[in-house]
Amino acid sequence: MYRWRYLFAAALGGAVTLALLALMHALIATGGRAPEESTPIRIADVTMSGARIESGFVARLPERIEEPERPPPAAALPEDFAAAGILVPEMTAALAPQLQIGTGPSAVATDGEYLPIVKIAAVYPRRAQERGITGHCIVEYTVTTSGATRDPVPVDCSPPGVFEESAVKAALRFKYRPRVVDGQPVEVTGVRNEFLYELDE
Image 1 (cartoon, rainbow, N blue to C red):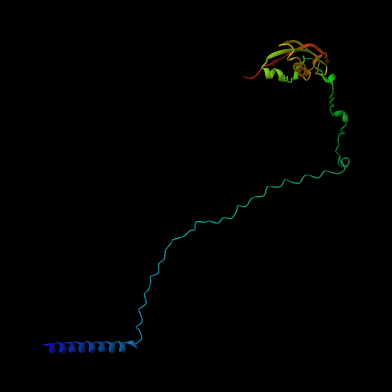
Image 2 (cartoon, rainbow, N blue to C red):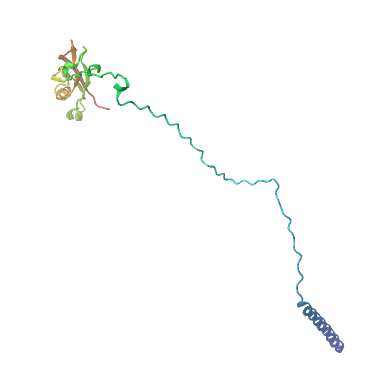
């Protein structure tokens, strides 16, 4: 029984060997031939009839700026006006108006009452401020022809002896436009001013 198996295996191996030899012979025989030329593939031409491709950027030349027309040259004036028959009037100083500006009190030409120009606030006395003292002080003085003040006198102050000095110093720094009568500045006496002394709550 084993004998038949060996014979069958030997026959099968021989058949396989012969088949391999035949296959190798065929491969060797076809290996020396030149490869067949491949048929070229033609690609059809693609055209776009009437199509126009525009880029996204358009280059433009700057517009030409027209130069403004130049005015015609002025006519040349003859150097000698007498020769050309042109009479030039003479300009004299009498034609120009003369303005006279005066300085000082006499320059005021219109009549009018005195008017305050500068009023300085009085300084709150430190002692009264620390103690919380409030009050008022009326000062009487004279407005001079130059607009300054002189001879200030406290006439009604409350509480007395607290705000007089501060009010007098402030009144001396006042400035007025003087009173004018018949074109001349005059002094004004008996002018009064009240100074109030109050503390913020």
